Image 1 (cartoon, rainbow, N blue to C red):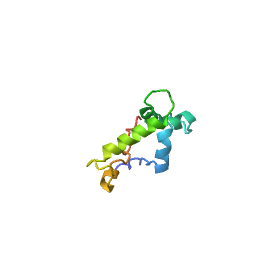
Image 2 (tube, rainbow, N blue to C red):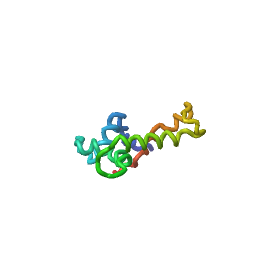
Image 3 (cartoon, rainbow, N blue to C red):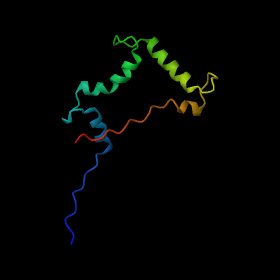
Image 4 (cartoon, one colour):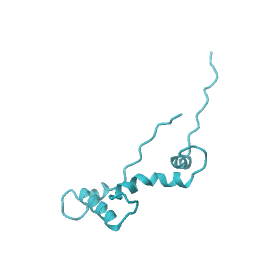
Length: 98
């Protein structure tokens, strides 16, 4: 005996996945706050004095730190291999809160 086939779960398209990274409350609309919230953590890391203003000095320090962290041999130049370490880390996949 064979029962009915189980229902198929539809996979989200890449564009839908991208949309839902911003649409935090899943109301099928992205508010300005939702759109900006994805950048808040990165901004806060750069804004060392916490005044919600990013100065050139704050940006430059972060850039120099990133360069020095990647310059493994300390020659003040980045080889292609060293430069590859500066790539943004892939986003962690979030589990569904269904």
